[in-house]
Image (cartoon, rainbow, N blue to C red; front, side, top):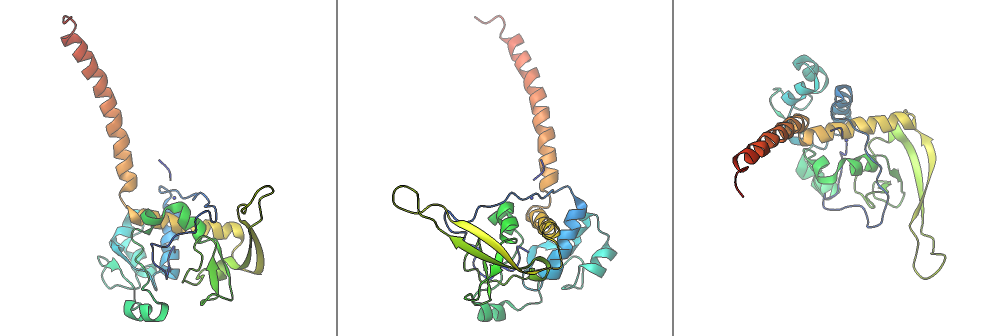
Length: 244
């Protein structure tokens, strides 16, 4: 039952990690952890909402995370006047396209499109790359167009990628990734991973707000069908017991 800012992708969602690229880590998100979901919503609003909307999610929907209307208005609702409005952005999409080459994608269903593991790993594998237009690159999404907006939290890191040759035969072995720290962030590595987990948790929730409830109902339905199957089987035996 328990599952898992992608934000800021300034590159088409059709692009993916290179084949045989960086190994994805399992996302430790928990869709039933309301505190985590609330924390993820806060991170999204503070770091993602400036560029990435959620057109299929309304501020009113955040009430299901255990938040009151007053809490939503005072702490999360910065781009709308009415709580029933969708989580739109103040950023002009046309200007963004002229500046970055592509408009920032909507994040309403990004978790369903990319997957929680991809998002969790992606947000933790940015590194400094002086050759990139933004000065940043990503191990999961090479040549990504977005900068690392969470760098003040995580810090600045460097990545060295080596592709060793196979011991016997031609070709190359799997790439080896070596991380090193350039400067520290305001969070420890464990705290940053927890922040990303909460953000991914929120993105997974937004992709299907009724997902947890639907799965709970599905389990009950399967149990009831299992019980009915037993009675149906016994009834069938009773009707057909004299048929040879």
